[in-house]
Image (cartoon, rainbow, N blue to C red):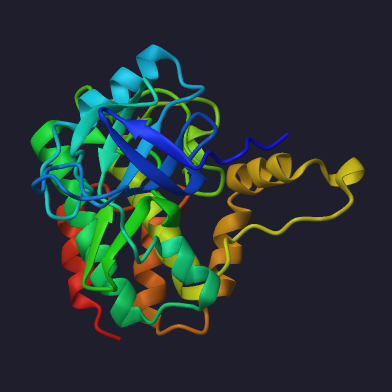
Length: 286
């Protein structure tokens, strides 16, 4: 049964009207709040805020996200404004991005390459900053986790919920969103942090440009398995890569080659660092 949306909530000592509640993951949700009244001087408790709560996440997961997120100060990373209490539960206060996410735009239309190029450069710079300055890998890049400040000229990477510190450039473990993590993560194998996030960034661009992920599903699950099982097989066999070639075929060859290099099944063939990737993205103008 769906939880009824309350009319108002208390954020620290202030009351807010609840405009909407969005599920950001299995373990968290984001509250879109409007301030009731504004008689006090302007503070971080703005008229409109987005606030993330961690209803089903364990304490270690919440500490991981907040301790990693608070490190990050970059124009293309959604800032953590404050750690607060929403109805006496721990919460992360952030800016409410009125324009939504890349996923919201994709629902309406496909992107042009000029738009996607601008967005890739910004999101890539955010990930490079996190990796080079803080040795941090995001691990859940997807259209829903790229927020739009001003389309397409200013975007910010959000949701550092499963981000991890890399140990000598390697990370072990699973997690992430089906369709956006690379084949080497299927069985908890070690993977390169930059290479894994670059794969997800490439998939995000592919979806934005073609409005589809490169997985094909048979409806007869009794014969072919569930959607997750079919996707597992396509990642394991490299079939997704063939499907990606077909989806990208209408686009100019330089764009095809760039994105296929980002999502290649072999991580040693994929872009492994952000510098070369961003240089390549900047060089593709059509």
